[in-house]
Image (cartoon, rainbow, N blue to C red; front, side, top):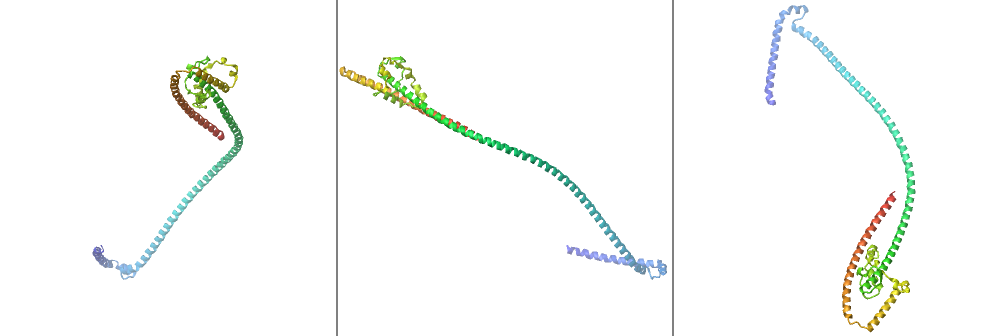
Length: 351
């Protein structure tokens, strides 16, 4: 680019020289033409020519122009400074107005915050009063809770004592029920033995035919039969055992034919006496009149015994199932009772 600009620069310099030369020539022609015109003027002033007059007048003109330029520059500087100072003054006034507004706003905000602070202090005083009241109420409730806790402990001890009494009563009731079942079982065993051996038993009410053969028959005493029957039943299963012995309980023997001593004596002693008499009489009968059909009767009795044993096993299985069901129900009842007891105990503790 510099190489390209050099020819243009040389051409411009050449043209400038030509222009200066033309200006010099024109000035020479102007002065040559002006000499005759200003000759008288130059003579009056005592100067050689117009060029000399211009040369002498030019420094004064240049000095005046320079003074004017300096004055104009000074005026311009003063005007600029005045404008700057005016602008600074306006900005200072604007800042002052802004600061005045900010101060007023700050004072208003301070007054508002002081009012809010006073209001909050009043509210805090109210809260402090409420806290004091709540503390007093808490103290009162704590005292009441202590009193109630003492009552709860007393009630809990009474409940435990009542529970112990209930357990003792339940045990006593179970013992009584067991004793009742045992007596009923002994009665049922005797009645079944009478039915099995076709013994004509005098009755005031009921019939041996309606009695189910649920207990086993065989050799042994009535007490042993009763024990065999009781071994099939759960003593704790009160309802099941009572239901199974209801048929035997409906049968009422006629005790009026028995001697007074047999009716009032101990059952074991009377039973043993009758067993001894039966054994003795049976031995005498067998010795006097042997039975030719004893084998057939024994086989029939054995077959009947097997049938009775089958019924006995079935009844015992039913009794076991009933016992299992009773144990399940009793366990569920105990669990529900304990859940209820624990719930009440927890509720009383939390109260």
